[in-house]
Each structure stands twice: as structure tokens, then as C-alpha cells.
Length: 255
Image 1 (tube, one colour):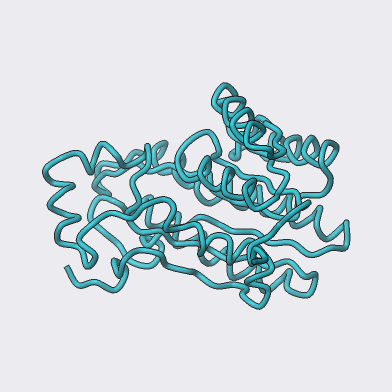
Image 2: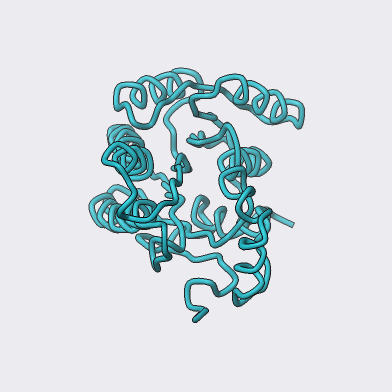
């Protein structure tokens, strides 16, 4: 049976690939045939990931990228392009959280979240878009947002604001680049356990919070696989500018 998510031969760049969903999406893209460029600041973890992908028969390259530095992003794309060719799929996944009451957040902490989650995503998407347009070919950018781009929670003002901004960036770029055959969409995961949030879910408060959610459980990373590949591959060729929630009903739940 043909693979509906086949991306064989395409070059995919994944930011935030040293851990969590970025690492997961990089391996997923490789399994569906992409030449994967894994990007982050922790090079040791990237090299381990490259070896895992190659051991399973895939092609992979590690590049050092600090998404908050436009020059670093440009260098990373240049290395990817010189090695594999033009990047046609982007998983814009680098992100951080810094839970705190709004009155307790310092300017530096606020800027750090915005610089990584929003400005960094813009740097990556902008570089990808420029190169795709110059190469006159189609492409897909998948921005990893969050259900907190759609709703809010106490203690998440910086994170929620950054992700809401990312959703508007997604729509804006989708509108601008549709004529070039470039699709830009956002994936909005609910509570999927990663390195970023595992410590919270291990607490009594975290467990109680999830128990009261619509699904009554956290999500599994693999439950994001089909939605992510739908947006990244030609299976979703008429999907553009959307924000796809994968959250067990969390975004609409009243709890």
C-alpha cells in the first residue's frame, strides 16, 4: 500500500531537534523518506540523533542553529542546502516555557520566551521562505504552536502570548506565500509529555489537572504523527494557514 505521507527525497529541517517533539518529528520524517537536517544548540544530542536515523537507513545531517540569532539560522540553512539541496519541509519546533504569574515575570524572562518561540520561529520561516521562493519550488512549513495559542491558563501569559503570535504569523505567511506554492500551517498539541513538562505531570497537582481534562490523560507523541505528516506532506496539499489542534478536546473543554 502506498505511503500517503511519502516525502522521499525531500529535504526537511527540524529545529529544536535535540529533544522532545523535535527529536520525534525528525525521526518521523526520516521514516517517511526525507533527508533530515536536525538543528539545535546541543550538538552532542544532535549527533546521537543523526546516528540513530542513519542506523535505520535514513539520511541525516546535524547543524548548529540558535533560532534567536538570524545569522546562525542563515548559516544553518546554507549548510543544509550545500549538503542536501533546498529545504522543502520545515518543522519549526524550537520553543521554551517559563511558567510564572504575570506580576512575577521579569523583562528578561519575557523576552527570552518571545525571542525563542516567536521571533525565532519567524527567523526560521523567513529564511526557509526566501530560499524556497528563490528556488521556484513548493514547500511546507509546520509551526509547532500549542493549544495555549488558542486558550489561556494561569501562569502561562508569556508562553500563551508567544504561541498566539505564532498562529497569526502562520496565517500571515500562508497568505503571502500561497502563490509560490508554499504552505504554512500550525500544529497545536495539547498536553503531550516531553522533557519540557514531564516534571509537572509527575506532581500530584499535574496528575489531578490531567485527570480533570476532557480526555482524562496526556497525549502520546505518536498521536501527533498523522496530523504532523498531513501538514508536512502532499497529503495535505490543500491545507494552508490552518491551526490544527491535537489535544483530546482540551481546547474546547470547560474545566
